[in-house]
Image 1 (cartoon, rainbow, N blue to C red):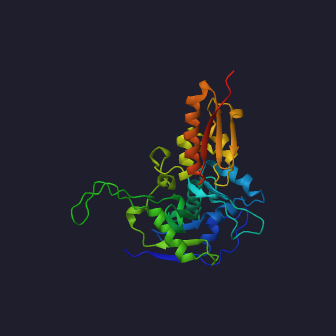
Image 2: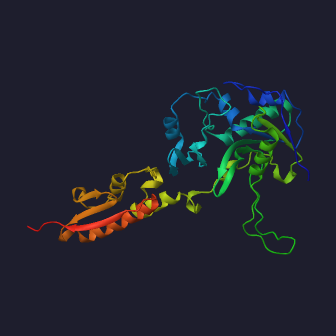
Image 3: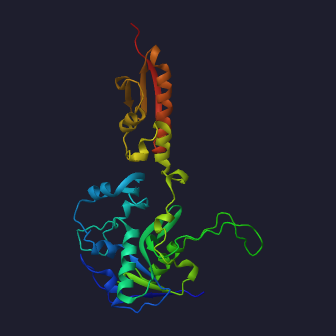
Amino acid sequence: MTLVFEPVEGIGEVSPGDDIGALIAERCELSPGDVVVVTSKIVSKSAGLATTRPKDELLAAETDRVVARRGPTSIVRTHHGLTMAAAGIDNSNTAPGTLIPLPPDPDGAASAIRRRLEELTGLSVAVVISDTAGRAWRTGQTDIAIGCAGLLPVDSFEGRTDPYGNPLAVTAPAIADQLAGGAELASGKFGARPVVVVRGADPAWLLQDDGPGARALIRDEASDMFGLGAREAAVAAVIGDQPVRGLPVDPTMTLDDIVDLALSGLDFPRRHVSVDGSTVVLSIGLDDQLGAGVLAQRLVSLGIAHGTAIGVRVTSLPQD
């Protein structure tokens, strides 16, 4: 099998209301079995989603929950279920001062473009909506499929055997992601070529209907072993599931902030807690000993999570 990636030339700037299917059909000759890869940015532009809203406000609107936060950088899970830096919001290749969020329904957008191309050309081709994303444990970015129609997004090899006869259990090539990444190499970041036609796809990848879409590539939260960043996971372990719903966790937090976090949900008087340099002082009576022990462990754990060495000193309250 030989795959050929052909960028579509001449699309130019996409404006609200532009017909993406028509822009593609007018500039290339499609063939049966083609896969058309379209960047999410032009899908959002054609839908009129470019905005001058403040980034913090837009990020909050696009976020389902925070996965990790380091200073100004937020990794979040979007309402689509995607986990991306800044919810995929981008300010590149757009007018200065504007931001472009992801399309709200990438699979639906892929399906609509597919139907429009069939209407204009008589051919039922597959369509992938792509966007750029980083990867955990890897430097750099690659394009991934956030939407697709007419394409098998992932092919499970479970139950097959390799050439040595070994049974395969977890091998599952992410076909839509691989095609999106190859298309990005062909189009280039600065070539103003937001559409690439992939020729020579394996017929087994192509579907008569829209198929399950790229949502099939999203790992559900119940099986996600890395659903929180390291600091957020520590906070979750200490104070429960609050970080899962977006509790701010920031390495620049002050010791007073960490004290307030440690006290969350505890019946321990805030007035009996003070800060002396890098040490937290707990003033306790006879009834506070157990609570003080729990709070001390929380403080040490949260200090480690936030890269801060916290000392804890316990003093006794005067007895009546």
